[in-house]
Structures are given as C-alpha cells and as structure tokens.
Length: 448
Image (cartoon, rainbow, N blue to C red):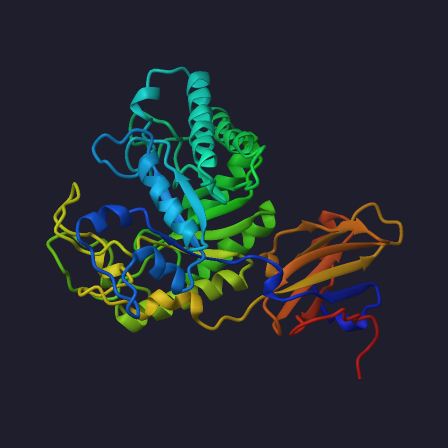
C-alpha cells in the first residue's frame, strides 16, 4: 500500500476520545493458595500490613483470581467453601473477583484436562448437562451469599479438549463435542446471572500466545459463542514467543475476534536461590534477555508486560500466585513452595518492589475513532498496523462509517480503508498520529 498522510484526504476523519478512565483495566493477583498457606504460618509484610488480602488491595491490585475444582478429595482447599472465603475477603477490600472453573478434580492445564470422576461415565450430552448444572449451582450458591464474581473463566488453559479421561495435549480436538461443552458452561454463567445485579463477564483461556489464535479460530468455526474475554497465559519458560510475539498475539486476536484480552497468568523469578527443597519452576533458565532474574528484573518485567498489553489493545494482567511463599507445609511435590522465588515477597516475608506494579507509571491508551464519509457505499472496511493486519468492519452511523480503537497516544499508526475486503490490499495507507488527548480532530485539509 502506498503511504499518504491522512491529513491530506478529506474523506477520512480522526476523532480522539477520553483517556483510560473511560474503561476498566485489571491489575490482578491469583490468590488461590493464600488460605492454605496462611494456615501453614505464612508471613507477609507490606509497610506494616500483614494480612494478605489487605496487602494486595493496598498495593493497587483490583482483581483477585481464585480457582475451583469439582471434587478434589486430595485437598481441603479450592472447593466451594474455600472459594467463598477468598471471594468474601477480596470483596471486603473493594476488589473484583475472577472465578476460575477448572472442570476437573485436579489441576487442569495446557497438558491435561481430566474429567471429574463423577462425570466420567456420562454420555457426551450427559457431560454437557453436568457441566452446565455444576456451573449454575456454584454461581447460584455464591449469588445467595452476595459473592457473585465479576468475571468467570469457563475452563483453565483449555488448549486440549476438555473432560478427557487421559492427558491428551497433542490429540486432535473433537470440536463438535468441545463446543457443546463450552457452550454449556457459558449458558450456565448466563443463566445464573440472569437475575443478578452482578453479571459476570465470561473468559475463555488458552496457555501460551502461539496457541491462542488457532484455538479461537477453531472454536469460532465450531460455534462457541457468548464469551466476552480472551485470556492467555504467558510464561517464557513454556512459550516459543518473546514479548514481541506476545504483543502481536494480543493485537491480532483482539481485532480478529472482537474481544477484550487479558494476560491472565504470568510469572517471573526474582532470584535463583531457594528457600526450601521444593523444585522451583522458574529461574534464569527461562529468563528473557532484557529482564535479569533479580528483584529489579522482576519489577521491570511486571511494568513492561502491563504496558505491552495496554499498547497492544489488551485490558489487564493477572500474576499467578504472588503470595505462594515457602512454609512448613507440604504440597504433593515437596515441603514448601515451588514458586517462592517468583512470589512478591522475599524469604523473610517482606514485600518486593514488584508488588507495587499496579502503582507504576503507565502510558494510557486513548480512544481513537476513525470515520469515513458515507457516500452510499454498501460497506466499509479498515485495516492497519495497529490491528496486526486484521481487517475490521466499520459501522455505519450518523452518515458515516466508524471504527473505534484504544491506542497509545502520540504514536504513528498506518491505516487503510476500502469498500470491499478484497480491495484493501490495493488501498492507500494513511499515516495517523494518535492525539495526546481529547478531540475531535478533523483531518480533512492540509495542515500548515
């Protein structure tokens, strides 16, 4: 596409809207382990505050994520009663909650999605019904106690087909079955919230950015619908992508599927030293080039992944288990924690700088609306570098075609428009400088 300055073309207008206060951004912490390790004597200290839930609220976290298993008889935690305690504690601090349904009796993740024992012998339709009823009953129970979450994950790191009898990470997904199960869960959330003052947004979640776009393309083709947010995990240890690849994924899936995007799991080590004999999962073996495994490196990682997410069109980041410090208790793997070197507290329980990533300085996106005059064309399309090359459909309103995006202020973006998708490859490209703040700005005549 040949590039021109947008200001020279009278057919296109650029309007700048309000800054970040016009929409919500999420600074999240997964605190699913907190009740367990508090019972094990975990100690925390943030400016004299010692209560974990208060600490995360006071340090700026506005979202608490918590997992729930169907019937995990190997642990007394992460069941409904435990989840109720976490949600109540978070809401008492004014925080929102993301409830993460694993739909398993054990960890569900990118490598395994094991069916709960009680559902294993059911038919496909029976499993869909059971998943729907469990989702509905769980949320109704929370609603009855004024604990309805503001966001719900229908599945956790669901790279593979859900409700399987064996780990089948690389087995082809039966999308007819998979879609039926996901839609059952989505319907369960919608039905539970139909008479609720809180109507949770629904997230679907895939691990590692390289898996996200193909998964959601297949889900869309199979008829999975009704969800609001694309969630993804990003751990450099298990991903083929660096930060550039992560940003490109967020940008493309946001515009391709028209959904908000959250990096709903991430983590980074602050030391390679261990506090116990548990095998720490993260360390220098999986460090990114510009982020040393150090206290400062962890804090920089958290700031930069949030800024990257904002710049790419995403709405938030959730850190996985920042309070999972080492204690006297055992997990199934070892005494202590496999994550203490990636927590937000040192080995004496003192808060580290990364805890305050929500309070760091960020460059907030501004809402930018592209408009093309309506001269009777049937449709209008837009593409650009800020969409990752994805073609989006402009909406006809008030005598023009418009498309709104949240973009980093004072950056240059290149856009192209055409009256048919097939013509975009031949369209001229227009350079736009995103306004610093406010508008409208009409770019229809040459500027002095």
